[in-house]
Image: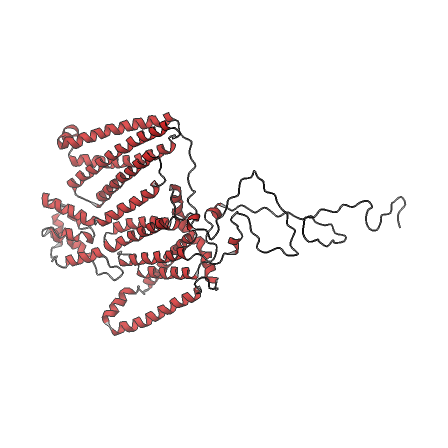
Amino acid sequence: MTSPGSTPLPANGPTGPQVSPVVGPGPAATPVVGRPQAWPVAPAPPRPPSLIQRRWPGPSGPARPLVLGALTAAAVIGASILTMVRPGLGWLVAALAVTAALGTASVVRSGRPSPTASAITPTGAAAPTAPPGPTAAPERTVQADPTAAPEPTVQAATARPGATGAPGRAEQALWAAATVALVAVGTVRAAGWLFALCLLAAAVTGTLAVTGGRSPLGMLVAVTLPPAATVRALPWAVRGVRDTRPAGSGVGFGRILTSLAISAVLLTLFGLLFSSADAVFAELVTGLLPDISLPGVIGWTFRLVVIGGGLLGGAYLVTRPPDLEGLRPRPSRPAHRLEWTLPLVLLDALFAAFVLVQLTVLFGGAGHVLRTAGLTYAQYARGGFWQLLAVTALTLLVIAVAARRAPKATRADRLLVRVLLGTLTALSLVIVASALYRMQVYADAYGATRLRLVVATMELWLGLLFLLVGVAVVRLRAEWLPRLVIGTAVLALLGLALVNPDRLIADRNVDRYLETGRLDVDYVSGLSADAVPALARLPDPMRICALTQIAAEQPRDGLWATNLGRLRARAELDTIPLSGTLTYCLELGRW
């Protein structure tokens, strides 16, 4: 029934022509009676990859079992043979084990791609994980904007190492060889301060070996990556442990770990039996095995965690190195010619005046110094060396800023840059020579020390650096300079280790004593065992007082603490009867 005044409606809906919605291609959907049909929703555009995904996507698959086995073996070896009190052979063997493990990781890439990695295509878009079935939502074609900027890309997991920012194989091998050479200093030299410097340099070269930074900004970023790589590598390693399916080598991580455990049990069992059968073999085994006391176990565990974490981060980096090649500062606005020309001209004039004074001092000799300044040569050298060292370092900063801001668009601009910066570089070389001369005079007057030798080595390195800067100024290209700065610093440190600094210091002081009769016995007796062959040239009782303290600090080393410098020192001390009294040595005094 209908109420009066109302219009009846047909049962099938309102009258008039009906317009059906236009649906894209695809299987026809079954209409549902009495329910409004939803329009197809366009898929959301893929989110562009983040900076970390672009620069450092990481390995695409789980860690290979062979890599995890090599890392575990290297960590156990390093924790068992490193000697923390006196460096020795154990550091070299541990460095070789670490290098072999990371080399294995760089050769054996990750296994099967993970779902998260395969979801990103080389164009940065999300790839479908399954083919659309009959019930899949209809697809819509989105037309690309021809004016839009291309999205950043993510390199494929199978890209060559160079494509991901890794250094060339030769350069990577050079940094790794430099790291091993720096660590090996602890096997041939007994000076602890020298080994500490070499360890700091080895940390830098080792980081460059696994990250591949080349530009100054890339090298700074590379130093911060190992701690982050250790954290990011934990899920990567866990996926490798859980992945029980063999890949590549056909051996899973569980089998490798079981093999290592069985080998350790067999070696321990038969080693104990052989040790109980022969005393000489027992002494050898005691030197090979780590300390099993409670403090020794705690120290071993700490070393295992630290070395294992570092190895895991290093393997994560070498498996898929970050892209540090494009990390460069934005080009700055070139300065006006007057803004940089006038300061450099005045600075060149000041440097020239100082160099003329230095030449007058060098050719005038001691008489000129005494007449003009009322100082001895030693006082003159001590009063100006440190200032000249600061001038040398600041000059490098000035040259770097000027080379970056100076315009080079025209031929006249480039000629002006070469003339002004080349003049400043040449004058700086004369200042470096003057500083070295002052240090020579200073050491002749007061004796050689470790600090004076290290600073003189630094001045020689700065002189070599100025030569390289001069080449860069002439060529107006310095992309190669940052790597050579670190490379020459490593060579300078290895050269210092090659000349045996503590023995060189002792030789200089002994020669000075034989000429002048003056010797700082307290200082030379505090040198390392490397100085023993030089101090043995002193006459008695001066020799006894100089060697007594060194001899008291030379206990017998175990196998992993074997050091060439200490071996030579003990062989020399065994031939010298040290029978002097402490009272006489105290009365001997400083000179």
